[in-house]
Each structure stands twice: as C-alpha cells, then as structure tokens.
Amino acid sequence: MSRSRIGSLGRRLSYWLALQSLAGLVVVCAAVYGATHLGFQARQSEQLVQKQVQLRHLLAESARDGDVATLRHKLDDFFIGHPDMALALTRASDGTEFYRRASPPPKGNVRVAQFTLPAPAPEQGSLDAVLALDIQEDAALLRRIGLTLAAAALAGTLLVSAGGFLLVRLGLRPLRDLVNQTRLLAADTLHRRLDGSAQPEELEPLIAQFNELLGRLELAYEQLEGFNADVAHELCTPLATLIGSTELALRKARDADELRDVLGSNLEELQRVAGIIHDMLFLSQADRGASARRVPTPSLAALAQQVFNYHEAALVDAGLTLEVVGDAEGSFDTPLLQRALSNLIGNATRYARRDSAVRVEITRAPTGEVQLMVVNRGVTIEPNDLPRLFDRFYRGDASRTDANRNHGLGLSIVAAIARMHGGRPLATSSAGISSIGISLKDAAAASGLPSPAAADSAMPTSSGH
Image (cartoon, rainbow, N blue to C red; front, side, top):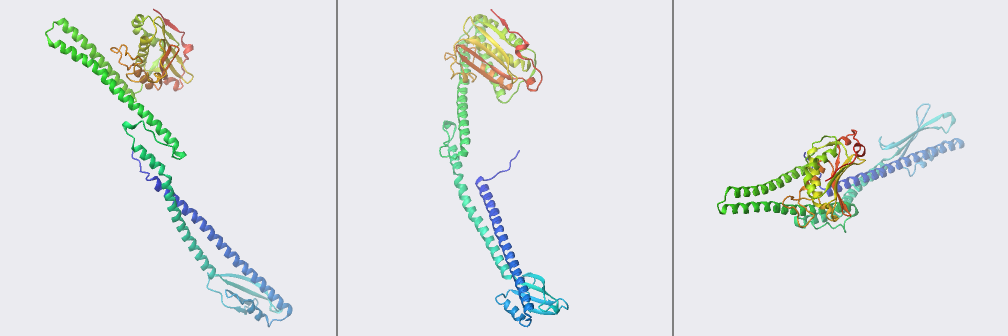
C-alpha cells in the first residue's frame, strides 16, 4: 500500500502559521474597516438629524416673527461652511419651489433625508424638504483606509510568516540534533544512547522510548552474536568428531565389527546434528509467527502422565518421583504441549536433588489462562540467570553437563510453544525450589465457552518410585 508523502514538517508549520496570520489580520482589518464605516454612517446620520432640527427651528422662528422675507437670507447663512450639503424646499400644495441651495451630488455619493416642514406662513400649508449630504470625501477616505488595512494585513502576514519560519527552524533544531545523533549509531555503537539533556519536554518520551529500543537492540544483537557462536560450537563439535572418527577408520583396514562401531558412533553424532537443526527450524518457524493447531484437550493431567511414562526410566535413575497436581481442559496443540512438558520434566530431572519429587502443577488463572509449572528442589537459580533461562543455547551450569545429549535449546522451545499459544514462559527460584513453566491462553475460555476450573476437575495424582 502506497503512502503519500507528508513533506517537510517545518514548511507545513510555516505555511499554516502564514495562513493563520493572514486569516487573523484579515479578520482584524475587516473589523476595523467595518467599525470605521459604521462610524461614518452614524456621523452622517447625526449630522442630517441636527440640520433637520435647525431647519425646523428657523422656520418656526420665521413663522412666529412673521418675517418671511429674511427667511431666505437665514437659510443661506445656515449653509455657510457646509459646502457638502444641499437643500430643496417645495410647496406641498402645488409643488412649486420655495427654496433651493445648490444641487445634490450624483446618486451613490449622497445621503438624502426627506421630511415635511411647516410653511412660515400658515396659508402656505407645508413644505416638502429634501436635505442631501455629499459623502464623497468620506467614501474616498474609507477607500484609503481599506487599502491601507489590506496592505497592512499583507505586510503583517509576510512579517509574521518570516518570523514564524525562523522560529520554526529554531524550534526544530532539537530534531536535527537527534538526527545527527542517530547517524552515529551502527551495529558496533549500539551501546550509545541519545542525549536528551538539551531537548524540549515534548521530545523526552520519544528519546526515552528510543533509548529503550536501543537497549533491546543491543541485547538482541549480543544474543545474535552469541547465538551464532553457539551454533558454530554446537555444530563444530559433532562434525569434528565425525571427521576424526572417519579419518581414523580410513587409516587402516578394519573388520566389520570395528566399522559397525564407528558407523554407530557417527550415527549418534549425526542424529545430534539433525536434532539441533530440527530444533532451530522449529524456533525459526515460531519466530515467524507460526501458531498452535488447537484441538479440544479434555485433561492436561492425563497429558502430563503420558509424558511422565516417557521419562520414567530417567526419573528412576535420578531417584526422583513425579507428582501431577491439578488439572484443566481446553483447546491446545497436544503434540506441542507434550514436547514442552517433556523438555520441562527433562530439565527438572537433570537439576533436581536426589530423593526429591518433581511436581507438575496445573492451574487456571481467573483470566482464563492455564499455567503448567514444573517444580523441583535443587540449587537456587541466581536472579540474574532467570531471565536468560529461555535463551537459545543457554546453560545455567558452567560445566555444560550432558552437553553431548542436551544442546541448550530445550527451554527456548518451551518459550516458543508458549508464544504459539498466545502465552509466555515463567520462571521463579528461591530457597532451593525452582518453578519453570508456561502460561497458555485457552482459546475456548477466550471465546466465552465454559471450561471447568482446575481445582474442581480432578484431585491431585502422584506416581512414586
């Protein structure tokens, strides 16, 4: 699935900051322009209203004094200093002109107020008045204000954008520093960690997570290097034995019995090599996400008893007894569980104290998970060794006991089987008692199907020798 490129984070932030600045300045300038326009309209309306009041006062004064002759001179004096205003008075009775002061400006640049005034002489009736105010200068001033505000918005946007671009570059400098630090990382420098002392608070969780990832990668790389060395060692030993025994057999003539012994010894070594390869293939499949083939399993205790029958001779030789405590049913991969139990019991047999008991504990957790634990009494495992028990080719004993029969993949296979069932390996050790096992997710319990509790399904069983 293709993904579109997001592009530069710095450019995106700069663009959005420029757009936000432009939008903000446009809103502010529009508000200023609107307020100015409304102010002009309010002033013009107030000016027209004041003139109407003054006209009424003049006409009323002339009617009271009976001096109609001087009314025109008073009206002329009234408009001195107001070249932007025009007035037309017509008689309402016959439409004849009573008074005219200038002509109204072109339509669109004028504010007009039409009203009725009482005539100065009662017999003349009333006058229709048209008062016009030329607003051309106000309109020109408003246009200049609008252009000024538009230029200010554009200039402000450019200025804010330039400053924002610089601030974004400065703000993203810690990311560039992190990139430079990561460039120095390589397979041989995984021990290094990113320095977050000079980083902003928002990047601290990312740096912490990345450093934890580096720690896991370092450990995985070390384990891979050790795994390669262990594989080479485990395969070189039987191959060297095969080569040496074959060379000795070819140096001189041997009878059939001697050749049969050599071939038998070589067969054992070949079987060991084949076992290592098969186990590694199994682990590889598990690492690639292979899952268990689940089938209904009515009794895990009966399954453990079957595995015990296979180890009976080894347990007798070690002077051990086996106990199976608890039971559970569910949906599991029976062959894989047999293999895991066999490895766990074999491991406990090698390290258990003589004349003690190896106990298989089967319990079901409240979450529905089933735990299979093999408990033995022996030497306490060091806390530092517990997390490594399930590593490939890891052996807790430095002397590599039974190295000719056990190549250190048993518990790794146990952990892989647990993961294939959606579970995890478990290991505890204290006061000479070690518990090693697995926790499994029961598919039937996860889907809500009823599954009896281990304590109610079976009583503890034991087998002694």
